Length: 109
Image: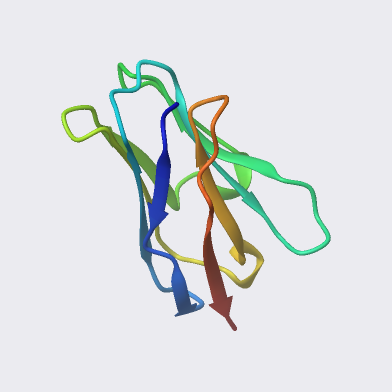
């Protein structure tokens, strides 16, 4: 079974940037996605990307976040710019069945 390991979370001020990484233990052919879950809220899709590079974003992050993937490194990235306090959440990556352990993103106002 594939393993996914996220990294890159942290504490940042509003307006700042973070880059999340999700490294897979083997090649992934399926669409990869980043989800987030804030306290007391349901987990929601943030962005996903096909192996061919077709992307999809939730409206609240369009224009601020960019998902990308390096198939040679089995890694998916989430570049987050212009961060807002409402982006605070645990961010998870998934290949559809397996989930990473999550990385905390905290945006202070």
